[in-house]
Image (tube, rainbow, N blue to C red):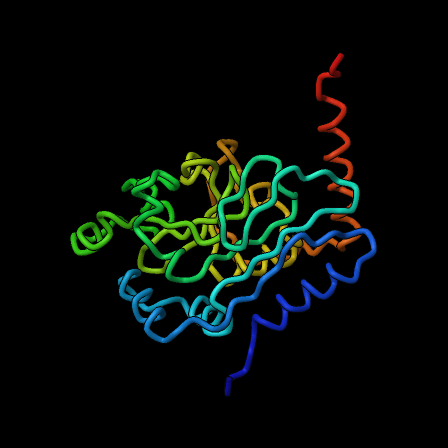
Length: 244
């Protein structure tokens, strides 16, 4: 490819470690080829500002990444197709970073998968009100889903002078309550948590005022993640009604 690869080796390593662990079942995984130059140009036109450097690098190295996995023995009645829509009962580990042409689209807001960005939310994220030019340019494209990793939660890119990531619930219900971070740091979060639900990390609900995250230091081991998944699965099973 003639360029230094910053992200692809890390995502490849994630798949290697998951695939070799005796207690892990990987249901599906896919690394897409680099995004075509025309797709990157269209994505930048969609954003209306220069694409964040990390975002451009990611898509230059791979136009999407997918993995879905669970500890062996943990039931997962539904599975997600590569770059598809998760359903209830999916495996607990999932990264579904969509191809750039699917991610950067007005369809996410048109189809109510993410909420419209309000003025106060924009100011909360970017530290100032929208300009008239931004209000006109972003009228129908306030946010889009970049990482469609679960039925109920998703990683959303909020458009603005510096596009930022939040994690929200179904139909973007908690977008304005999520902590926020750069696309680069979001990739770090997804990798370091082994694809576990990102909402538990930065989707804070309504407990306090959201804040910007400028570093991510939590890097639990895969064994620790597996243990936590088994505990959660056990707790869920213990609360289910017993059939007669």
